[in-house]
Image: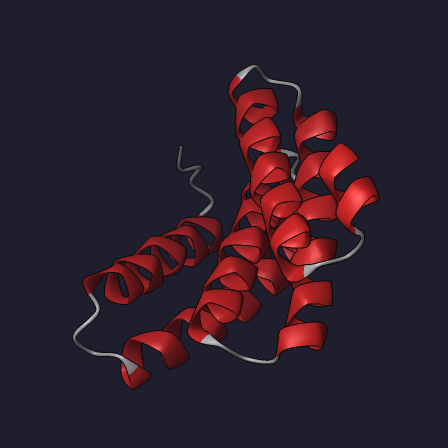
Length: 130
């Protein structure tokens, strides 16, 4: 946050803050602090959307947005908010599918697609994934 304050809304400052918020969300989620995780992930998602607006649809921007959406979906599912989780997972899956299709030789994109697809399937079946 201090770097963002010092540097303004530079793409690097925004991405660094977004990644840090994802990490905080991960810790909060692991500790069972779901509302705090939800807030951290939601702020990260907002930054990812802001970066997409500023930078367009580069592969890194799309991947970051997809991951942020899936993180929000995970915590929404854990909170029993299935409809909100589904919306997040579907948008995340669309982004991941486009990346996997556009870059078939990048294993990370195929892995991301499989990861979010599994979350959507678990949601449909009522299961929870860690």
